[in-house]
Length: 461
Image (cartoon, rainbow, N blue to C red; front, top):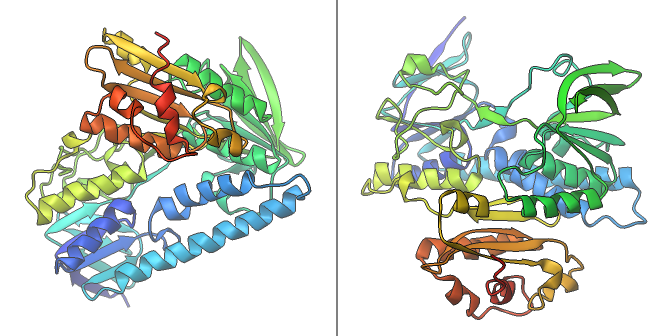
């Protein structure tokens, strides 16, 4: 017998990601009745603590801690168990923290709009409908599987989720795509002991970065033993004899590479296809991203879209800031908007990491700006002994400075602790702190930040 349970809430949240859960907590604390729907019990808390930031960065730590005497497969399996334990704890903590509140309820299932204010969970027996005057969509993004013959059907295709949960270390791993995801997994798995090859369609890695910075990063990856093949267009995949044969074209010739496993790291798209947004009257772009204004309102003013699903930068901390914007609309003055954002940094967690913010030198010159460039190799920075104490002197620091105002226009930090240094630089950029002020500041010693005392004075152009 089919039954339907009809629920109502002040706010309905679709998706347990960073933006959705942050807003849900704030709204329940303000006395709102909140229902949050998450399609998978494996994703309480969102992508970051389950299959994204937390497990991958934990694997970065484990992989670089491997000793020569550690047997590769055993060490890898133990590392994956450590990741599983942590992500399970985070998942349970996220669920209990929200569902344990008196005015919050978490429902597990796939939601689909039936009208602008109502979604249904389940289609047959025990169907649930939830109606709310305000709805937040935070369903994130999903991997793009390229339309390459044989790829999707290969038994050797692995997802990024597989690579954070599977306890077997492949002897050979091919990664199709040299973006952030591909490079991070390449670095991780190489340090664990796998033979790693990157197939990148562009003529070099990190095409958005300046060529000199990209060249240093490429040299580090190759120095770690990663094979990088650029200008490679994958044309087909065929399974044979317990392995996959990946065919690609380069310089007009077709070549093959044999591998035990391969990852298609060719980007992610907003997860909107199953939401039934047409029934809600919510418009999307050609890529499936939900169209929003600078207050994150969709074409239905009572529906907001937060995080990857709105087509913005795919970073957890951007989703967090999306939550701040929405919370301000619902509980505050309504003045906060995405237009307020400036100098948003990003970090690529290879070893050592590459962190960037603002303009590249190329972008600044294309705009005709009057600039100075400060640049120094990490190994040459006398004021950064931490790099030597940590036995990691590879990398480079580069700053783009406005020659007229002495303000920092952009930076690329490829070094140990880059993910921390970049936050200081981004804050300085947002607050209008000059390069000279940052150069003459007092920093702890020995630290990586004190490299700013020296590098900002090394003008090369």
